[in-house]
Amino acid sequence: MLEVINLDKCFSSGGMMKKKYIKVVDRISFQIGRGETFGLVGESGCGKTTAGKSTLRLIEPTSGKIVFDGIDVTKLKTKEMRKLRPRMQMIFQDPDASLDPRMKTERSIAEPLRLRGGLSKREIEERVMELIETVGLNPEHAHRYPYQMSGGQNQRVVLARALASNPDFIVADEPTSGLDVSVQAQILKLMNELKRDLNLTTMFITHDLEVVKHMSDRMAVMYRGKILEMGETENIFNCARHPYAQLLIEPQPSEDLGVQDAESENRNGDRPGCVFYPRCPFAEKNCMEKEPEMIKMNRDHQVLCHLV
Image: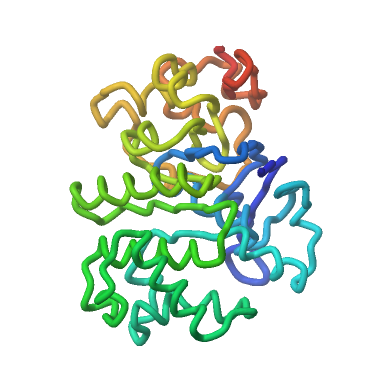
């Protein structure tokens, strides 16, 4: 369904005279099979959300290739991309910020249907009520504003709106963050049911290892813009090979990961060697001087590490 090849995303900072470029996503490559859930996990600031938005071209990649269902979306013009967008949707992290506070639930869900066109007013109303039922809301929720709903209910509205255009592929960016544990479980159960019933292909972005373990078929561990380890979720949890993946998965004291998180480190790309070596307990001289290459451990397990 999706193939991403050497995706780069840089942002500029500073003034006109001293412009500085920060590489947030650094030559990442991965594939997502049809009907599969691909988890992208890492600390805050590692580039997960930027990778997800770049994949959908909600922000333009600096370089790289994105092939969706055989179509190279990086070469599409605005008009062509607009036609493809109904098949590629995103669930944003904050449901309250995703919804217009002046729109009732029914109008929020109906908006993509009206923008797409081709349906009568009655057909749109029927489709909206069908979606409300699909995501586990009651008919009376259709006439409520976001402030009259709980966080979990608003997240269901966001999910219904994403499903309105019958997408093939969804990027879910931390869809359960900020929700109570019981509500998180309900949303995750609902997403698994929708995946099964609608054969959805999903890219699931999270920092929660328990969530990615429960939700994803395959996963990638990301750090400072790079994918350090990738493969079947069960294999990585049972036998993580990269030191960073091991530190994330195995219970460790917080100081083992260092004082700074990925967002606060120097990310200008000028430093040679492995991106993780300043925090790696096993770093050797080679790690500091030479950037590692992705090593294929078996059919679907890859690791970016000299030590492997």
